[in-house]
Image 1 (cartoon, one colour):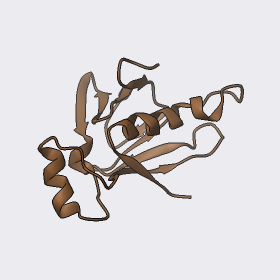
Image 2 (cartoon, one colour):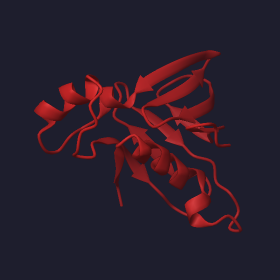
Image 3 (cartoon, one colour):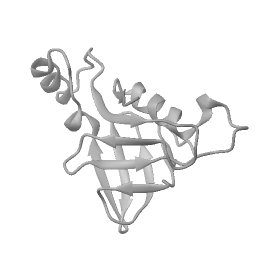
Image 4 (cartoon, one colour):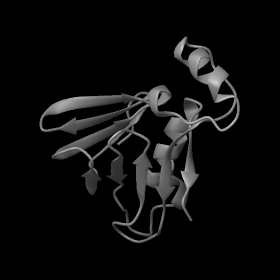
Length: 130
């Protein structure tokens, strides 16, 4: 389900946090409802810049929009139930398995693609493991 500037959904599975019942992805953060408490991960805090990270990270933390499209997670996508996930660069790693929809949903309308789009609005990317 889309919210004002983000995306909320019930994950198939989450590794790295106990009993996650809801995930919300926003352009600047990831929120997970774990054991009844919201855990908030700022994407700028886990971002990996592959060029000029020593410069871009402090500028981003000060609120400047920076180039470089830092990566915040590795991703794996398969058009089969239970296989698509994002492995965020947190410590410990948080792995969010996104829900699967029947084939009548277009590829760009899947939760997997919407998560990528929302994070992209904040200037963040993910790395394809395939």
